[in-house]
Length: 461
Image 1 (cartoon, rainbow, N blue to C red):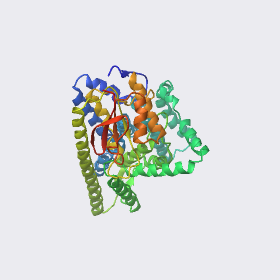
Image 2: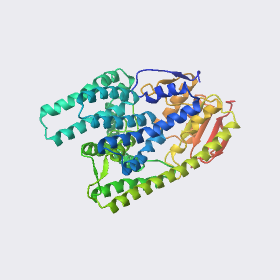
Image 3: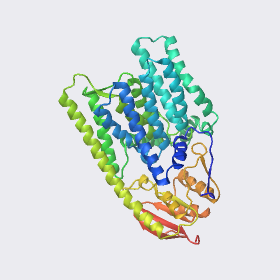
């Protein structure tokens, strides 16, 4: 560990679970600590939805609980964006407090200034989205009260600016500030200049539809699409039928969030996968703000609740089966690692675009990290704009080569392994259906169990 990683604490808008994790690991053993952290990541958005729902409705309804269940396990969770999920929970709860304390403006401002600083340190994007959300809530309140003068709106926005002063000043001191908004704009112009803008936009549309439909990701892509279609389609159908409504204070925020789902850049200030994060925020806002319209026939309410509950149950059953199947993959892989020495340096190569809909890259993502149980160093999340950890030594060369392979995007298994061999990578885990057990010059196959193949460079031992 000490030869390849070093702690690099610095001011970052992405430290929530790093700080909590270090504290937790001081008082409990590592496996229990990991479970506590994992439980917190799942629980935070769920609890945040329920707190915001209580602030809006004065109570927590069965509909809110069921909808919060869809938020608890998400596309973002399986990708491991834990600080954002913790930030989402705090964002929702802080919004609930802002709404609940409207009649105590001085206390409201004082507490939210502190919440804003905490949220900024947990995750900068969550803080920015929270600021946007509060601004839209204040605009809604101004219009609903009839006090739409410039002076009144300016006063409301000015109070919000007070919350942002310290976090913005801190943000400007971070490395994250160097990856600003112009990155996405420059990428767009680069595509236009290369004559691929139309193709890129077509890809972007398909990716956004994918992220909207797959609110939770399992091994079965078609099942994910089907559940997502039923969930979003059911919400839209409920609005059209006049079954439920959105709390008036969040209507503008929900409408703006719908627009952001389609126009928000894929990455911003060093934060990627934004196209997957915004739909989750939209779902969380809907989960908290939905209620049945007054006067709706109780039979319709019961039917709607039953439909949501059945869909949630089906979704969780699909996830349980898919995780069981993935668990079999991980077990066979760990058993193989116990029989082989994987060497000093390891890496991974995942082929995308497989024609097999039963295998997705996320099923393979944990595999390289499991090599650490065998004493092998692998590239991990270590970016100066995002994590307080730095990769050093020989592993830094492996990390650079692995990143180049991803960026270039046109590598085959042989070409990727050849590039990793140049930096003396000992063992490479390849996850692919189409290239399973493919012989590669210069490498031996240590073990294989579809869809993974464990390659070792000849002469590395």
